[in-house]
Structures are given as structure tokens and as C-alpha cells.
Image (cartoon, rainbow, N blue to C red; front, side, top):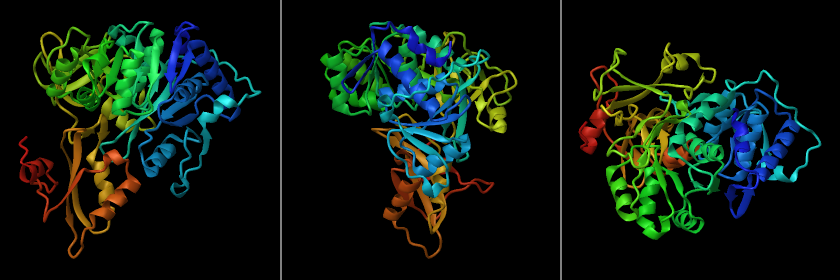
Length: 487
């Protein structure tokens, strides 16, 4: 099965998408996808072309993605929170010529040659071109999407996912038992693998209903859950925390599944949610390079602190620093093997070789232990990475931008606890002799070059930054000396 064929699994008369008051059946959605497909073909989009999709959640996002897939093009969803500089890097790296968007992007200063198309006008265009079917040799191993993930060395890398990767992951998560009558909330951004695979593709696979929200707003989200009788929730811990604060038990009385992933679930958030609504949060784990789901907790099988068990037909291994497989309850790096593991990083064979070994195992960089019953527990996240509202922030990328600000001598960004976002960045910096910092100007500079969620919450000027014996800035010592955090 190919990704765009998932729309065919629903009954023609059943509702597929509810978006801003529009109730769209599977037959209507399929017709819209065909219309988008013909128009995109008329624009010159062909098999193998990388096509950027820059949009908030909408029915049009779904149509555009599936239409691109049906043409054999490779969809590149872009985080709409990125700055123009960050967006331009992705466009250049992927060799993109067409951006399908809901808003015009000012990219002239970044020297990228692309054509922008307003996807909200596609429904009103009747193309006289009938796009041809895919060739017979087109198969499930062909790339379908490139998901750009923040890079530990500054620039993001593009994880190439095939049709097989995505469809197989959808089949693997069917342990969550979504049925045709279920109503699935899609408030997570569709550009994000978690939201796309779980809320969109899996729902289509089950022939169920997708309820689209453009963004998370406390009252709007709770009202929709109550008024529409939402049954399946997929969200990050910060959303569940806010729902717990604002909602009433009656608001969530129809919910059968509350799935949490994207970052580590604080125990207090899980307990408060269960105490108020009588629903246990089912925690899972994944990463873009695995399409993304790797582990899930089936409702009724929760275990405190665990991210669940491995999904069907997946191989998990925990290894030490030398690559030796460790027994149960030993701590080491998590390796993942299965049909959902990415093809590789786009035009980056060196990074691919570092991440996927000769046996096809994906090295996650996450430190875990697996107990005797198969439950997986995260011990530590990728070194230095900050996870804020489910978004990955790599300090190196932020630091490189800060170093470009006039007068900066040294800078380091570390993660600190944030009650709302889970984590936020804290910047510690040293000024050059005679230079004076204007924090307001620094923030303006960062806002121009970074997504807002990547900008540190706080800034601290210090005389010098602690270093290791080899001269490297020691973030562990920063946490200890300036914030009193012990490793």
C-alpha cells in the first residue's frame, strides 16, 4: 500500500475530516485530492520532485500532501515557526522549486529560487490537465517525505521516509484499536511526524474521523472535545497539563484514549490528569527517523514511568558503548530496527552511516533500560538537547547564531525546567572586553534568525564560562555552578 491510498480505506459516505465547520466525507476528500493532484501536475510537479509544504493544520494540508505522494513527488513539510533563514536552508538543501503554502514567504534576501503557490486557492481551480497514473515500477520503497530534524551540529538533517516506512508504522500502531466510529483530535502540528502519523494517517487507515484544529488554544480545544464527543487524543505533556487545569470531568467523558509523546511525561502531569478525568495517559516514544513511533502503551497496560512496549514487528536493542547487547534492566543506548526505520538522511551518507549501522539498526542516541516484562524507560535524552512543548531544540544551533551577535565572546545554552513548556533554554554568555550587552537588541537579532520557540527564556552575563580540562565549555559545570543543578 502507498501513503496516498490510505484515503481509500474509509467508506465513501463516512466523515473523513472536520475542519473549521466543514464536514468532509471520504468521497469528497478523495475528489479534492484528485483535483489538487491535477493542478499540481499542471504546475510542473513530477515524480521525484521535492515539494515544500508550509502550512498550519487544515484539510488542504492533507489534500496537498496526499496529492504530492500520488504524483510520486516527495513532500517536505516545514515547521511554520521557523525563521526565513531556517526555511531557506531547507529549501536549498532539498533542492525545492515549489512551495505549497497558505501565506507568502519573504525569501528574497536568502537567495533561493522557488515558486510559491497558495493551497487555499487550489479547490477553486479546475485544471484541464489529467495527471497520469504512476508507472508500474513505482513501489513502496520509493521516498514519500523528507522530515527535517534539528541537527546536533547546527543545520538540520532531512530524514527520508518511504511509503513503506509510513504505512508500516501506521499498521504497527493499530494496537491502539481505533475504529470507524472513533473521532480523533488533530491539534498537534501536521508538519510534525507524531501528529501526521498518529492523527492523520492512522485515522485514515482506520476509516475514522479527523477533527482539525489550526493550533492549540485552551478553551477552543476543550470545547471541541466536549461538543464533538472526541474519543482519541494525541498530545504532548504541556497540552495535557493545560487541559487538566481548564477542563472538567464532563468535558472528556467521551475520551477512550489519551496518548502522550513528544517529550518525557512528568509523573505529576499523568497523576493530575487521571485524578481529574479518570483516564490514564498512555505514553509512547518515537523519533522522526522511525516514522516516528517505536513504543506505545496500550490502554489498560500502563506502567508508571514507562514509555510502553515495543510496537509489533519491531526490534529493540540496548547496547553499551562498545555495541554489546545488554540484558534486561541494564542502561544503554536504544537501537531500533524495523520497516519504519528511515531510508537515510537526504544527500548525507556520512550522517546516515553514523546513525544506521550495518545491521540496519537506528542508533537513537537515547539512553534507556528495558525491564524483564518489556517495558521501556527513558533514562536520559540525547546529550544537550532541549525539548520544549514537544519541539527539539539543539543548543549548538542557537549558540552559533548568538556568536554572530556583536560583542559576544563566549556563549552556551543549557536546558532548564519550565512549568509550562517542560524545558526552556537558558543562555550564559561572556562579552568581549569593552563591549556592552543590549539584551533587547540581542532578542531582536535572535527573533530574525530563529524560530521563537528556540530563543532562550533567560540570559545571564558571566565573567567566564567553566571549561573542561581540554578547554571545552562544560555545560554540566554551568548547571552546577550557576543553577545549582546536580547531574
